[in-house]
Length: 266
Length: 333
Image 1 (tube, chains in turn blue, cyan):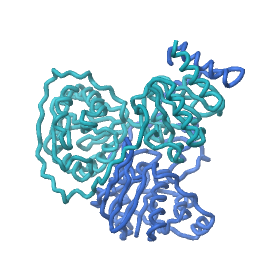
Image 2 (cartoon, helix red, strand yellow):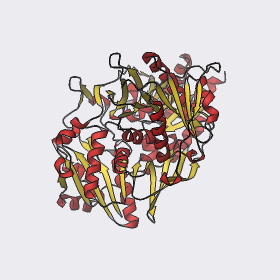
Image 3 (cartoon, rainbow over the protein chains, first blue to last red):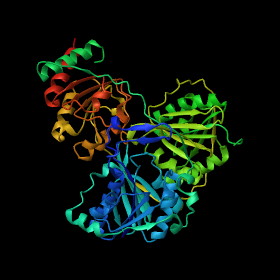
Image 4 (cartoon, each protein chain N blue to C red):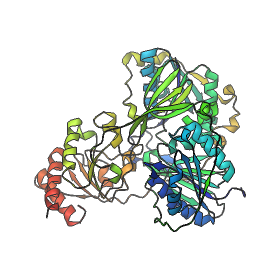
């Protein structure tokens, strides 16, 4: 069973709103230099979904990531979790793209990798929250797709997906090859083991440039966009919290109730 | 493009009626329709959807296109994308707006890529640029820490819109509109996914989207027992329901159906009692529309205290039960 998982390296989404500012001239985030980058959490869960399938069926998991100046310890984490190979589409030309240019490039990367039964992606990247690249890849490659997977089982050339719905879930069957996007309801991704980390240190990724996948560098990344970003800004927060106190916490609780009653809120 | 005209809303039927999201999009769409001087359309795709066409007119549609077919009973990308492509070829709207629902977030990207056009998902604001007449799409990014405004010049201009971010028009059954059935040739063999079963999680009490008061718990609740306590407390208040953060759901303490946040439910209750949750921007994306947020958290530096109007700093186990019981007692007066 060959599985390809697409992952994206992003600014740590746990960064507090106070540390997150914006350069209004360049429309880019201004964040502390010490802010770590991580694999986007939904992508990590896609890796976890692949590992669960590999645990029961065996096979090979290839991790594919697109970007520029990628941090090796970050993009190698899926290898440390148990994935087998890593392919990086890494070049300055790939930078500043949108869902369109990213899906185009990843689809070409997948074509070059060649052999696969299943492609897994996170439902959206936790930085731009665009939510399109997975389905864009499916459309470009002409594959069937299922989104919002919280559980994936494979057998006899088909996948059975528990797909999240507003009231619960539905079970969707799809023939392979297919692309499935994964949501957080799948559960927590496993931690890399010490052995996994040591093993991943020695593994070298394949690095492909635009020309290696048949892409003109002047037609990808920022120059292959369909969407123009006009403005990036922080919404105004008027927060002024009235903190209610008391001699004891129970008294504070009573005072809170009285205050809300007085303000005709409850 | 001169030949693309009109604002089209992708309508959804929920439990046999026009979905609340569709009414909201019609409300927002009517403002765009006025700004452009162009008509407002709805497209309904499904099985037995013809019955809600009149409701779509009552909520603002000038024309309703209906694709009604048994093969469209369950949402699936293949049949819905190809049906939409045929409708769009026929109608050629300037703008297509879809709800950011479990259907919409699946349909919109594939449809956009099929049509070689761009789409922005989860918009909270849409407007028309006065000079270019292009759609300006604004959405939260970086988990809600920032907002971004986008535009593109391909047609149709597409966006999905977050639930509860637009206001519906008043229902007017005297409004007149045209209902146009469209016959689409659907081939079962081209539908590559199959819905085998639908499972509704058991839910006590009212839906989060309808609750007046929500007691929401985070990582600090500590486990299933803590949430059972929140459930018991919620029964003391009229119109109350329990919500949770993604962390609590991912840990398996509560079903994901009560997750509030960017990738969960969007809620707008009168009061949102944020209990032992830090108030991450992803969570706030789901509850910032609440009239009043009350925070109970033992960490005074938690982000939730920058989002709430009232709060108590302390262990929720000591604060919340007394607080809720006092409110219940005062309400009896």
